[in-house]
Image 1 (cartoon, rainbow, N blue to C red):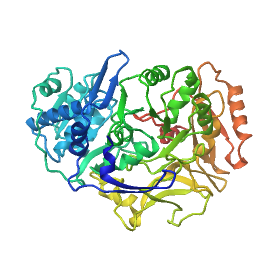
Image 2 (cartoon, rainbow, N blue to C red):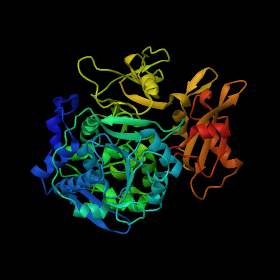
Image 3 (cartoon, rainbow, N blue to C red):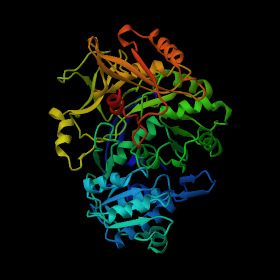
Image 4 (cartoon, helix red, strand yellow):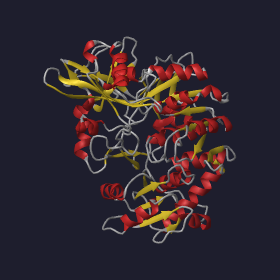
Length: 546
């Protein structure tokens, strides 16, 4: 059962490739009622979630199960005073409760605020104060519950804390409450363009921003799932993401269920490429999506050592993909990695969609939801192969969907990114002669050296081709002659000697392959990189200490 067809008009060419797409939904559209409950009505026994963990525990939920559990959870929230418009912090890692807690909050018209369990008490306090959070639902694992309870004891808006599968003083036993709750729920009157979710960004360049989306956000991910990840009816899709990040919305619930596809959930804390590959093998995963870093570890482990014969399609996003990883994955699986690009503030903006010919390392072309252009600092559109900022022009004949409503509590910043009615992503790229887009870097990360503008990824792409390099980052450092000199910071694979000979060899390897203005002037080897809680390298911190 593929309900996505009820909410859009899609135009395909003679080969079945998507060329136009327009959302079409009722004004009271709500994912909880119109997708979860409808799937439970039409295909009650179809699998919605397959969950397992490193201890080999397993749970399988049908759409009927998710519908019933989400109703019960919604009644629990109602019992404790949570209703339409209330903000609810949800820290559930990859715990199976997330897949009925999220629809439950949607049904009530409450605003879900997913977050990672890596947050400190100060991080939690910041989110509570910024978004005026009323309640929290948290994992039984670790000290998350205790941290949230400590925050709730402070002078703020946080009133109620629910904890799953564990009794904690000062919190409500969520599991026990759900078990005894009524499974019948009367539909709450919600509007498709009312707030539904707030995601906090990872905060690489300042305090995390509270990105607010409405209920149509779920429909924006139809293209994400069907035409980029290529999920299929009764398939099993696995996206490597924790529920605290927007990537979970991309690959772990909305578009997949709209397309009648089950989601595979591996509830792990410590990433192990071998264990994850065994999950794909054991459960016969049909489509898979992960950042390039995961594929990098996969190829070192050897994907061809596992039975991945059920795997039909693989995709990647979250960071730029270098050609070396693309080619190695193809050698080991026979599958082409299909790259895509988007933001917490939007859905899939650029992608190598189903049926298109991909170019290794390219983000692909604009999806039909967006009219994308490359512009300079003055907003002038650039020619092919010129580097500029990725911007979105609003459509002339329809409403723009897929882009966030606002930065909650910071309307000035929202207005800044919507300069002159055009959405400025802050990311830079160039478009080649064939219309494919190639990522360069964040606008703030561009290096200006000897009169040239150099994107860090151009050099990082070459660095990652060196067999001894595991991770890298390129920054600009002050230089009286060049303006900025190019510095590479690298982490080596295990067992490689960290000495001047290695530094010189890596530097020489890269400079032989690049134009002289891109040459690395300085190279530093480090044991670890400073990273955000989402795992992104903090370039600002590298610049500060260099």
